[in-house]
Image (cartoon, rainbow, N blue to C red; front, side, top):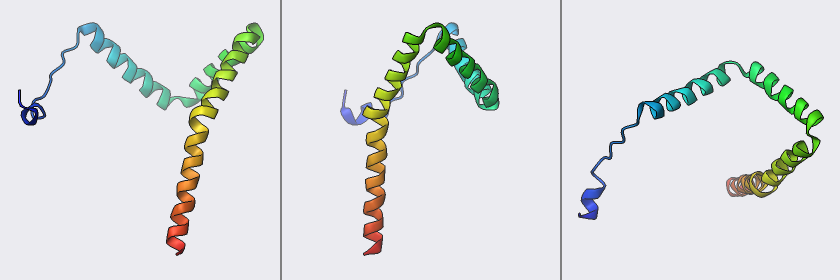
Length: 94
C-alpha cells in the first residue's frame, strides 16, 4: 500500500449496541451536568463533606493528588502563559 493513498482511505468503526448506548449515556450525562450545575455542585459538596467526616485519610489522599496535579501540570502551564503574555507585550511595545 502506498503511503500517499493510505491517507485518502477512511476507516469505518461500527459499535455494538452496548457501546452505542454507553456513548449516548455519556453525552446525556454531560448535557445534564451542563444544564444543572447547581445540583451537581451540591451533590459534589455532599460527597466531599461525607468523605471528610467518615474517611479523613482518603480525603487527605485526594487533596494530596489535587495538589500534586496543580504543581506538576497546572502551575507550569500558567507560568508559560504568563511568560508568553510578557513577551507579547514587550514585542508590541517595541
